[in-house]
Length: 127
Image (cartoon, rainbow, N blue to C red; front, side, top):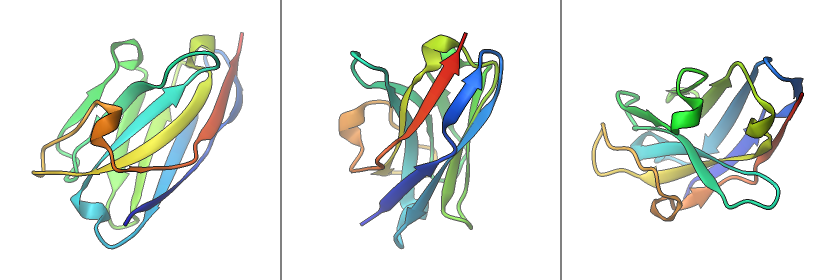
């Protein structure tokens, strides 16, 4: 079992930055690939970023490449999403998710591939 708790969301002006954190509990966090997803009002949940359990592989939604960075600290059981140059269209509830991975460099981009989810943290970007 893995429990996930997100933090770091808030209200920020366009062009600003936020760093989201996802704290995980459970003994097998280091075996998990991690991902961030978001859901804007009236829209379906979409993939944002993913990282393998060893941190060696990452993948991003095209619209956030160059602006967002996913990272993890396995010693702290925490995954981060650094978000820079935020835009109003980044406004959403951001969820982190964990998936047992078949290898150290494996990551996942589909929500059904993840077994555990956090409750989410709100990010609002004003224009």
